[in-house]
Image 1 (cartoon, rainbow, N blue to C red):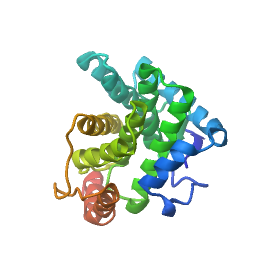
Image 2: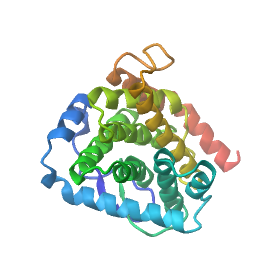
Image 3: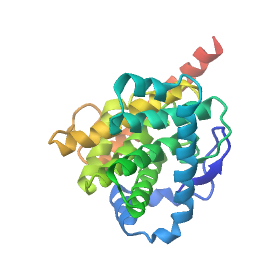
Length: 269
C-alpha cells in the first residue's frame, strides 16, 4: 500500500505495493471499512508518528518558504487552514533538507505527507478514534495509489493533485460522510486542480500541496452542501472511475510534451 519511513529524498516506485490493477473506488471503500486493523496498524502508526513529526518540525523551524507558517499567519487557525498549512510545512521541511523520516505513498514523500497529515489534523479536531483515523488513512492512501496507477511512474502531472483529492476522501469519511461523499470529493477536487504540473522536488511543492489539500477539502464540502461538478464539465466524466480515467489519460498521454518542455526550461535551453 505504501512504504515505511524513508530518508528525505524523493524515491522511485514503492516496492511491495499491493496489486494496483484490481483497485477501484468501490473496492477501496469496502476494504477500508472492513480491513482488520491489526494487519495494518503498525504501518499506519508509523505514518502518523513520522509524518506528524515532520509537520511539527516544518512549523517550528525555518524551512523553505515557510508556507505553513505564512498560511496560519495570514488565514487564521481554522481546521481547514491547519490541514493545508501542516501538510505544506511538512513538505517545506522535507524539500529543504530535514532528515526526519517520512512514510511515503506511490514512491513520494510529499504524496505520503499529503494523504496523511491533513487527516491527522482533522482527526484531532473532530475527536476521531484511532480506528476512524486508521480507516481514513487506508482510504486516502489507496485512493491516491488508484489515481496514480493509470498515470504511470513518470509524468508532468503533479502527484500532489491526486494525493490532495485522496485526502479529501479521507476527510469526508472522518466528517461522517459515506462512499458517495468520498467519490464526489475526489471528482470535484480533480476538476479544480487537474492542470498543476510537476517541475521537480523543491520548496514550491509545499504551496502546491496546500492548494491540492484545499481542493480536496473543498471537493468534499461542495458535495456536502449540495453542489458538485457534473459529467461534461471539462474533463469530468459521469462516474468517479471515468473521471479518474480522464485524469490518467491527461497525465500519461497529454503531458508527454509538457514534460519535455519543462526539462528544456529547467536546463535553460
